[in-house]
Amino acid sequence: MKAQAGQSITERLSALADTIRLRILRVLEAEELSVGEVASIVQLPQSTVSRHLKVLADAGWVARRHEGTATMYRFVLDDLPAPARALWLASRDQVADLADLDDDRRRLQSVLAERRFNSEEFFGRVGGEWDAIRASLFGHVFTLDALLHFVPRDWTVADLGCGTGNAAEHLAPCVAHVYAVDQSETMLNAARKRLDGLDNVSFVRSDLERLSLDDASVDAAVTILVLHHMAEPHLAINEVARILRPGGVALVVDMVRHERDEYRTKMGHVHLGFEPDTITAMLESAGLTDVAARYLTTEPDARGPGVFIARAAKPNS
Image (cartoon, rainbow, N blue to C red; front, side, top):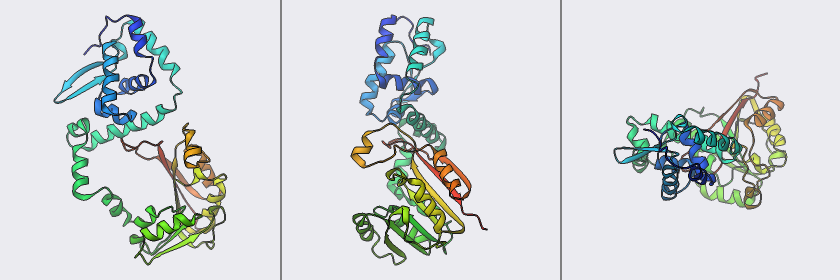
């Protein structure tokens, strides 16, 4: 379906005078999407996205078609008249460095993955009803809890920067022992309350840069959304290497590098995330091997930056 061609260049230019609409065009240039899918990617209400899409459609930037109850939108560069095509190419270059674009691309991939997951594309296109049905029947965490039973039951695991005990709560039923470590007594008290009744969890108040755990005392160590709070995260990774037994595994989960500077003042973040290569280099420098990192799938309704996981192992000799 061809986009409208009769609009003046002024009308088209006016439609581009909004960062949100530029972001929407970038994702629609990559893939045909429904209103709901666009809303998930740019993290705005569907009503707001619908208004932006109407402006873009009226200005001739996007084509739309109906598929069942859904309206699908697509931006096709080759369908534009030459002046509009040149205008978009110039505008696209100007917004290439927008901080939100990387997150938009990751959320787009998540939306597309959700489509592929369902046996019929309808579910992904109109809101993922199957996920909602499955969650209503079984909850949100049963898959994670089931997969954790692959972890050897005789392992001792350190949950470093445990906070209120979210990770330790999942780990404890699957392993021999968990050290829940945090420098904040307030956090540890919250974790104690959350994990009350689990007799294989030890609560340890300690700085992560100087852990009060013995050398080679754990089979695995995890830090989940912790290192960006630390001035010198490499010191914590060195400590992880120290406390791991030969053959032990280190897992680091943290935010991808972003530009949300308000996180420094609102949430005490020292670093605005990391490039995964930065963390893998720290793991290698600490003497760990088999280092690898990958981006984690971003949930469509997640409002924070993207997240990655890095894994490494302590050599057996």
